[in-house]
Amino acid sequence: MFDNLHRWLIIRLALVWLVLSLIIGCMVQYLGNTRLDSHIVNMAKSETANYSGEFATYLQSPSASNLALFNKRIHRLIENDHLIVVEFYDATSNKITEVIKPSALQVEAELPKHGSDFSNKDTIFTQKVSLNNDTYLRVFIPIFTQADAKIGYMEGIYHAPAEIIHQIKQQTFWSLLLVVLVVLVTSLALYPLIIRLNSKLLDYSHILALTNVGMLKVLGSAIAKRDSDTNIHNYRVTLYSVRIGEKMGLSNTAMQGLIKGAFLHDVGKIAITDSILLKAGKLTAEEFEIMKTHVRHGEEIIGGYAWLVDATEVVRCHHEKFDGTGYPDAAAGAAIPLNARIFAIADVFDALTSRRPYKEPFSLEVSLDIIRQSRGTHFDPMVTDLFLEQIKALHGEICHENEALLHKKLEECIGTYFK
Ligand SMILES: [Fe+2]
Image 1 (spheres, rainbow, N blue to C red):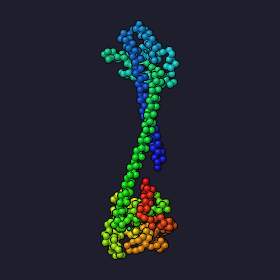
Image 2 (cartoon, helix red, strand yellow; image 1 turned 90 degrees about the horizontal axis):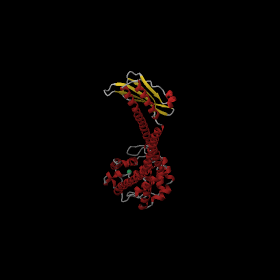
Image 3 (cartoon, rainbow, N blue to C red; image 1 turned 60 degrees about the vertical axis):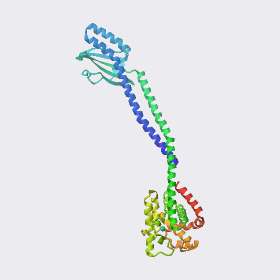
Image 4 (cartoon, rainbow, N blue to C red; image 1 turned 90 degrees about the vertical axis):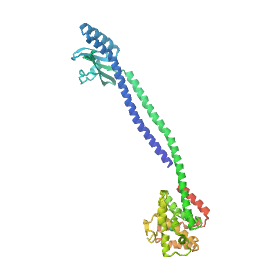
């Protein structure tokens, strides 16, 4: 269980780490790309502002001499800028002039031509283009007079500086790495915390289990005090039942139900009047019918508490008989819960070998003869055979021990099956 918990927790924390890293990593990558694009656009707009300013000046007084002067200026500008092509148009889309950076003639020829007509646009427009692992930006800038009349426009191709792109991509990479590490460290920090909390929870569960077991003993003792002076019958029948259950390989859960049921099997006798419960002589038929109701009273008493629900099988069915002649349901064979079939033989054997107000204890041999005769009628044959196989060891261990030692043995059983 402990190892399973560690493996379960490690797998889930690793999954959380992977999923969170993936989601946050994608967000960081997206924001990094957006930041890169925004940076390139801003740089391109900044550099093209010089050209559009020169062109606006020219358009205010166009002449051959001013065009020559304008050409000279943009040739000088383009040598030192990241623009590789600039084209200038008047308001009717007639090209006024263009300049291509000499070192970028090959690139300009390879770049795909834009399929859109930008001439009708009234705002700055950009379009990203990639070629040979380099990033380019087409830029369209309309030129207006102070009275907002469109008098021309320029188009340019901006070559984004590789070192800037590399720098921003590096920053994005380090951000991604930081995110992955932070999520990893958080997951690692959660691991001991969850283990510690689970340990605390187990401690509290153990305390709760002990509380429930304590309540079980109190309830069992309460009915024992009405029926006799000691708990010893309850201790013996519970220990006989546990030993048979162990021989049959019952699950831990089934053993818990068997122990609870065995200890509380006659709890319903609380509802039986003393004149019947403590009667020294034989019960009349009418009194016996009343006595039989103790199994239903017992079921009602424990039925309201979820922790005792698994004891119901024994409490309700411990007087059923394998051949269907028992009570309260006259159930037969496998219709009787296994825990009740196990307990029935333990209960009868203890009654046979014990002193009662109306009889002396039978010898082991006589008691076993009665048990054998009831194989297949009162008792499940399979359970009877298992019981008879180990009866000498059980008799020696349990039958003649004092109450204190039996209580100690019962505590050991509870420690084993309720831990
Ligand atoms: Fe009973």
